[in-house]
Length: 381
Image (cartoon, rainbow, N blue to C red; front, side, top):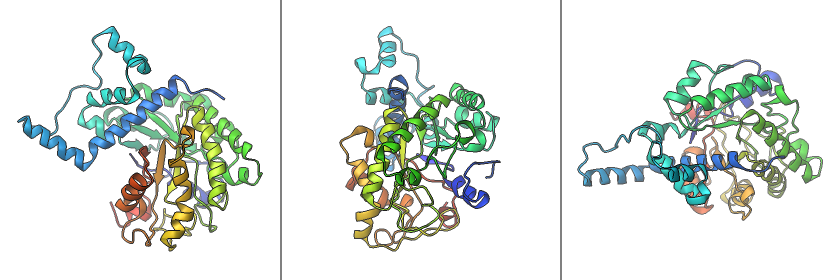
């Protein structure tokens, strides 16, 4: 899944507002129930769309089409999700656990999508208006975006934000993943509505991991009340230097402190029904350059990177606690020559496939960082 822009606003705010991350103007405890079931299905749909979009799958589809003597390599399969013909089918869709697994239901939805709908589901869109605009409508309705990311300047009151999100869902092809990066502290997106949420470093410095749990519950409650079902947090970088990506955003200075505090936060968030997205794979803890202006280069050895930067990601991916396993992972623009001397991590086959997918075994959704940041856009497009 690709995001048009996400974390870029964080650092624009840092330079413009001197530590206050509230966006002023646009510049380019509940139990998991039905909403969480829907979100789980949406994530599986994303995974199936991603699988369909891979070169290997595309090749297989072309071979299958040739075998069937179909002149169209990619078939148009009609309108999205045709109505079931029987009461039994309707019951199966309404209560998937009674007769259909989540994966079966997701496959059912994807099988009724057009190619345009499949492709649209791979994108999380950003918009620059403070209301439900025609541009946003085009993205969620005509281009079939899989999600929308929102920022502080778009969330000014509870009623306005809830209304805008309801409009998005009303006009969307498929129920949307509505996200924001509400980390608390330096990166606040819903501060205009709820006031201050404590940030990672602030919580870590209390020395009480229960504060991370309470922060996670509060943020999940506040986001769900608005209709936001995904939090692009927590940041699981291990702070090694005082760089732009570490300022007040990290859960300490060792892998274990990050695993302990970020894990407690994530369990609370996901346990309450909001999807968590850990970032910034494979780690920005030693980066002294801001990727929004140039490409960070981390000149640490392979052993050092595995022992420190990758340690939290490995722990959360390989945990046996489902609530500690992130629904999403966000890679970023960082060059680590000891592992891949050519490509930044989020464009690197070594990092994304060999390490994240195969070695660490992650089978969830991967979402890019902001693709127009200079760290990427100055060389790759």
